[in-house]
Structures are given as C-alpha cells and as structure tokens.
Length: 120
Length: 431
View (tube, each protein chain N blue to C red):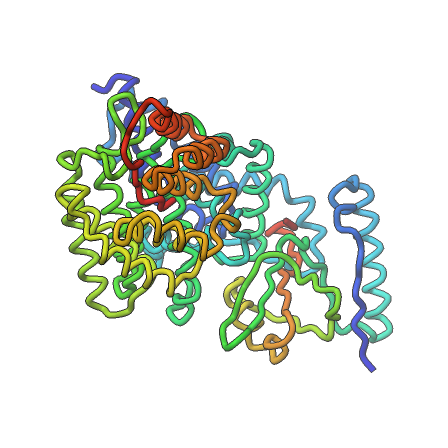
C-alpha cells in the first residue's frame, strides 16, 4: 500500500513566523523525513511554494484554458498527483494538459519549493 | 559638451523608449528575477546620470546602459547570495545555484523583449495583474502612476506587482515566448493587453489628461516589435494597423485648450496622412492572408473613418456591415453599441434607439459612460431634449476625466431650451 500524505495549513502563518520558529519547524520536518527514511517508508515529498503561485489547467473542447490561482472547487477532491521535472512553467503546463482528467476536472500546477529561487 | 539638463532629457527619452528592451535581457540573465534585473537597470541609469555630464554621451547610450546594467546584475546577485547563504544551507534538496546563462548561444535582445511581452501576459497571471505588470515592465510606469490611472491605492498596485513578479519568478523560466504550436492560444491575451496600453494612452480614463502620447507610442513600438518577430500573424498586423490608424488622428483629437474634439468635428487637415497610409497598407497586407479577426475588422473601420474627406462622406453602410462582422466574431454589448451608432447614420436615430433597446444595452451597459452619451445624441436628434438631458446627466456622473466632463457639460448646455442646436455630436463610442 502507498499513501499520499497531504499537509493542509494556513500558509499565512509561515510568513509571520520568526526565524527561530521557522528553524524549529524545518528541523521538525528533517526529523520526520529521516524517521520515514530510516524505516524505508519514504517515497518522496516536497514543500510547495505559496498557493498564489498556482496555475490551473482545464481542457475543454480540445482547448486548454490556463487560469491564475489555485484550483478551489470544493465539489471536486484531490484524486492523485504526479511529481514532474520540467524546465519551466510552460513545460509543466504541457504535462498538465495531457493528464487524462484534465478534460473533466482541473489540474493545479504548483512549483516545488527550492531555496535559491525563493518561496514566493 | 552636454549640460546636465540634456543628460537628464536623454535619459528620460531612453527610459521611455528603451526600458523594456533594456530590462528583458537582464531578466533572462537573472533567471526571471524582476527585482534583481530592475535594481541593476536602475543602477545603470543612476551611473549614467552622474557620468555622462562629465564624459559626454557615449556613442550608443542604450548599449552603454545595457552593458553597465549587465555588470551590475552580477554584483546584485553576488550580494544577494552572501545574504542568502545562511538560508541556502537549510535547503534540504540539492538546490542548484542559478547560473548566468551567457554566450555562447545568447538569444538576441529582440527575442528577450518578445519573451518579456509574453511573460507579462502569461495566463498564470490574472488579467488585472497582466495589465499592471505590462504598464510597469513594458512602459516603465511606477506603481504610483499606475495607481493614479486606475484609481486604486499605490499600495494595492505595489502588492499586485510584487505578487505577479514573484509568481513568474517562482514558476521558473517563463520569461520567454511560447512554442510555435501554442502561439494561437497565447497571442490573444498579448494583443488585448497591448491594445489596453494603447487605449490608456489614447483616452486616459481618469485624471487630468485626456491623452498620454508616450503610452500610445510605447504600445505602437511593442506591437511593431511583435509584428516583426511574428510575421505570419494577421491579427498582430491588424492590431498594429488599428493603432496606427487611430494614432494618426491624435493632433485633431484635442482643441487649443486641450479639450477633446469629437470625430465628426475634427479638423481632418491635421490628420497624419503618412500614418493613415501606413495603417491602410498594413491592413491590406493582413487582410490578404484571409484569416479575419477582430483587430483586422476594427482596423478596417478605423481606415474607413480615416478615408472620409469630411464627416458627411463617411461610408456608414460599410462601417455598419463591419460592425455586424465584429459582433459575430466577438459578441459583446460595447460592440453592439458601436453598431447602433453606425445604424443611426444609415437608418436614422429612431432605428438605432430601437436596436439599442432590443439588444438590452440600457441594462447591460448602465455603468458605461458612452451608452448614455450615445443615447443622448440619438434622443437629441429625435427632438426629445428632456430625455437627452437626463442621459447626459447620467453620463456626467460616470465621467472621471476632466476633459470628458467638459465635453459633456458643453453638450448639456447646448441642449438648454433657448439653444436650438441640431443633432448632437456623434463620435464613434469605441472606448
């Protein structure tokens, strides 16, 4: 069995944390990942950049519509995820429009957190 | 030798003209980091301001600025890296440093500018963010001026800019033109934003000035750049033709006291014949490709207005037909209103008023100044002055621009009972 653990929290909290609080949180995540790894339970995981960086793709009638903002229809639920390596947003959107469910659902694309590029 | 004043003037002209072309290559070199690119460019302008009065103007001022800004962008990055070192150490994943992607194989600055234009209009940004970013990054307008133009606070605009730039940066290298097979999807947003920039200059919606020529000229330059880079796109050529044909009338759009003059009352002798000719030539080339689109149709309408020696010679039947084509291509109440204006000239004000109500425009465009202004002119021609005055008063409530208010007030006075003026002015209400 494999499980995807999704982390939901109010992201505004991270932006008001002191540096000490941030460091403590990051250390907590490092411990958690190390723990998972040591038990062979770690398949992958990432921090995402803030939700304001999201794009959403819908393919309707063969045409892809890209819009700003996160996917927010509460009547649809997260049904899976892919972690892809892409050169940039346009390349990632090319993958997103090929996801089979893009023709009925919405595919949200979020860049994964990387330190030098900055969070937001 | 150059006096300090002339240096400032040179730099202002360079800033207005070349800002996006200078910013674009820096942005690519900085991996889409607007903040770093802008800081480097602003340092280059500051250095020029201090050095040029002593050394004289360099042979190519723009190339000098580009070279200095490029060096400064590297300095800015080094400093940024020092400051970030502590945080970098925390990165858990193998985070690679961005590298300066320099020659060999460095794209030319024209390609960079094309990339910047497309980046500003990327669908990952809201339309509001697209226009704001375009005014800032393509026209060099600071947040304060954008805030004045849109009647929002400077803080709001500044936040919108920070978020848009941060989003592009966080999303990686999207400061580039789309692949050829995606051009058809991406181009309409770019054309729409460029036309908005042009219109903001052509009839500044708010504030003291009716026209801001420098915005029009920048939009024209950007559209020309697009046409040069994307030669097979008839809508790009159509947009450029539309801008040229509209801009050709600029000298006649204001009277000696700076107030707007309606199309029908303009002194056609001061229209820019060469620009009209250029616009017509471009339009003909676009239409020859036989892929009609909304900008080509609007350019065709502008060309017909531009070809009439007097307002009475305007080919209204053909303009009416073109509005029908435009309405089919791009249904919407504003186009429908324009169609009614043309209809009034072909079939009379009663038919136009009837069509206007049949299309439900009184409801759908109630907050739109030109609806009430058009209704007022139709009602005046039907000798219904009381209703005409009411429509003008409603239009006045909606006018944010001082010059526009003056124009409406003049019309209202002309409708006072003792004055027996004939039909009202009939400007094409195209926004």
